Image 1 (cartoon, helix red, strand yellow):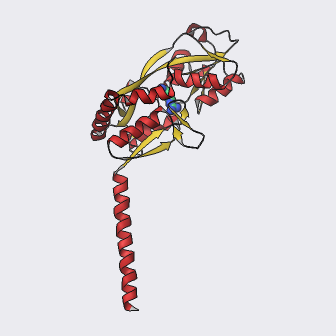
Image 2 (cartoon, rainbow, N blue to C red; image 1 turned 180 degrees about the vertical axis):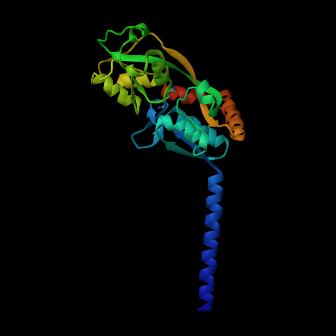
Image 3 (cartoon, rainbow, N blue to C red; image 1 turned 90 degrees about the horizontal axis):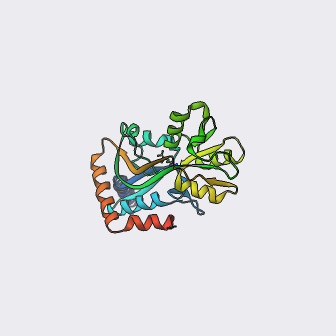
Length: 248
Ligand code: ARG
């Protein structure tokens, strides 16, 4: 009986030890990406409920290079910079534009893609160019550069904010806004998925996408930049982008 107790106690102790060791190792080795998966083709929830897209695949490729385990945290777009600066996520890949304002809170990696702010309107809209936006109601995703530019350029009263680009597009279809300002690739996706919409030929603003990393995590910034450089050089980044954005 005594021996049995000892064996059980020893087994339990061993289990706990292994568990702690295992957990500790796992955490150190985890790379947590923050994103807002409402932004196809960069990040979206696929038919299996998984977060897919260019950013998810680039993040996975980086994690593989660093021999780390990738975990993805989906959250509101406007919470991402704070989450990153506060360390609850290690890096943000969210089609995120490099901006001076954001650089006050986080660091950015080298850029891996470019985006263009474009204007979506109904096919029969009287809005034909950027110059026609004055006095119109513009739909945006809260906290995005499109949102910030439009508020600066046309005033808060003329900008309606939505939790996602898709909701802004819904509002456009319902006539609650006259246009939506959003990045070009998601715009193409939304126009394709909804009838009666078009993207204006005039571009609004061109910008660089990069990975945000906390200011006090220079070690990770360096590792990510090194990994990115390798993935660019060996064609992996191009391959991922071409998979989701077929050449026209
Ligand atoms: N490029 C824009 C920005 O940085 C929009 C990004 C929105 N991304 C997203 N995953 N919803 O503000």
